[in-house]
Amino acid sequence: MDTKNGNTASASRVVVVTGAGTGIGRATARAFARQGAAVVAVGRREAPLRETAEGAPGIHPLVADITTEGAAEEIVRAAVRGHGRLDVLVNNAGIATGGPLGTLDRSVIGPLLETNIVAPLLLTQAAVPALRESRGTVVNVSTTIGQRGWPSNSLYPATKSALETLTRSWARELAPEGVRVVAVAPGAIDTPIGEHMGLSPEQRAEVRAWQLAHTPLGRIGRPEEVAWAITGLAAPEAGFLTGTVLPVDGGALVT
Image (cartoon, rainbow, N blue to C red):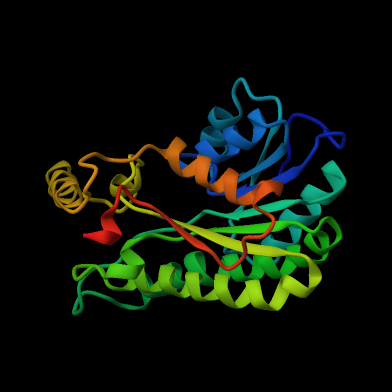
């Protein structure tokens, strides 16, 4: 693991964003940096993290695989050692591999559970002492598919439904300690998730067509629109919100 760009202990807030190399994570890291925060941008690949940090001196790349033993503790240590505190943890990293029943085996199931449930659980657990000190916030990134179901890929939305349950449970558990836990549930957003799933261009086009047909606003969302929701939920002005799961989905849940 490696931090870059020096120490910014004087920044107003310190934020950890996982999956910060692309998509929603990149947009979120940049949004917090524009607000003056020191952002520890976590991802498995250095090159995309460098792109995230380009032109944003408040973003500090940290190359780490959140599913490895000890990664959660090391990420929190890096934030606290480098910047003096931790105010916001954004559990954004996730994978959407899977498939219909009859195609799943442990080689698919294990990494999905480790990335989407186990890693955010361990990272939140490791971050609680620092968040307790700062009276900070955890923001989990779910998906509206988790509230509707996805017949061709049931396991992915199931992991995100579990993350929403953890959000509500942690909100109750940590409220007496002054720590808020909230979540956003994006709908159809313009990210590379289809490519990461290994879908062909034709398959991605089919998915987009289905998403558009089920999105009342009639368009695909932008990562920056989800980042706006994440930074808003983490803002001090949202201090009376906890346990909330905010859809950012163009109205998909009301169809």
